[in-house]
Length: 144
Image (cartoon, rainbow, N blue to C red; front, side, top):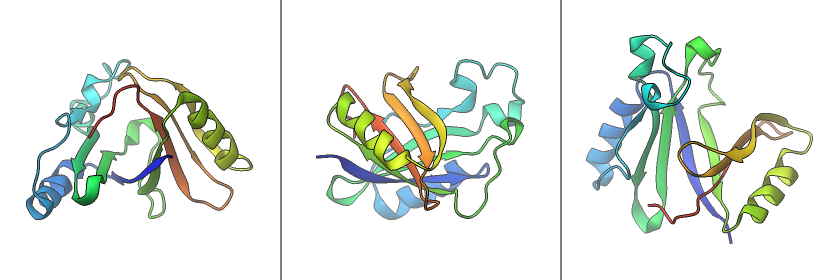
């Protein structure tokens, strides 16, 4: 059975928001805060964008995880209310990830096709035909 988590996008203030959320929920960030400057291919982005959050995850009640990243204006990303929330599905197998991605994205707009990522997971994202934003993330290791 797949697990659902909320994924939020911010325009440069994801870390500030998550420090606030951490003050409310408690706990620690799972895996720390990953920065855009750590990603392959981002060597030529501005220093300001290198400091933006690529990924942050805060385990909260009941095993749920609140996750987020900042948008990248230099890559044409603009925060618009509606694309700042994703449903992140974490299936139990790569085959299930492919099945869910194919089914949910049918008739929608694929942002990133399912593929192995540099951080070690199998990941893809899309907006479905109803305008709902989804991420499918299969990790070979169970992560908080």
